[in-house]
Figure 1 (cartoon, rainbow, N blue to C red):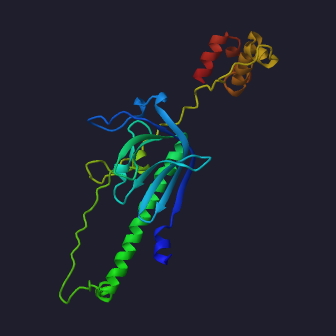
Figure 2 (spheres, rainbow, N blue to C red):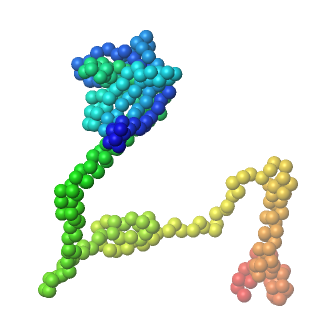
Figure 3 (cartoon, rainbow, N blue to C red):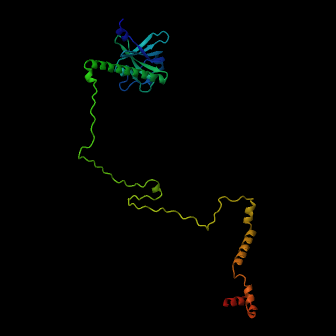
Length: 286
């Protein structure tokens, strides 16, 4: 057997799924695609192992018995014909429709179901990897053939000279810069210091509220405890009377005209024997 024959019979297993289900499906509807919701559980006809095998440019989906390895059915995916051989259903990502062939020109459509969603995902990835491999191999062959027929000219990389963007003598550049009107946003606008929307440029003065007057009494937000002795002394009526008397005494001591007895002693004797009202009038005359 020659090397070319060995290369033609070379197979590469892309995926193995231990258990899949095969269903007998109704005919394809006139419009739209297949739906696995229309398949009945009683339509399951086989359960076994699935293998995805790459045979040069063709990909084969083989349904085999897990114990004996006997082939139940096979789906051949030729380059560029994946959609006609493997079709996804409309209502699930775990079910597909396969086009199987017997090798004699006869074909049929069966339903394929995976138990896990990740198994169906790996099935799609295996088919995509085979397509990428075929495309990369074909591009490689085209490159080899092209290099033999004059590849020196086709593979030559044309390097364009650098473009000179420098200004020629006498050329100038004019740039128009427009003054951007301040929109009045930011911290200065929040404080009232930025210019108004009319763009007059006049800054607004920052107005602050006056401080509270000192005459007002600052009251505690919380009342004192009911059994506080200090609060009881403050609220007692006797304390108010004592404070009032002490205030009057201080006022009299500070008033130089509150005590007129020294002045009465210095007055003449006739005037001193008069009443309090006469002495007060004499002092006014003096």
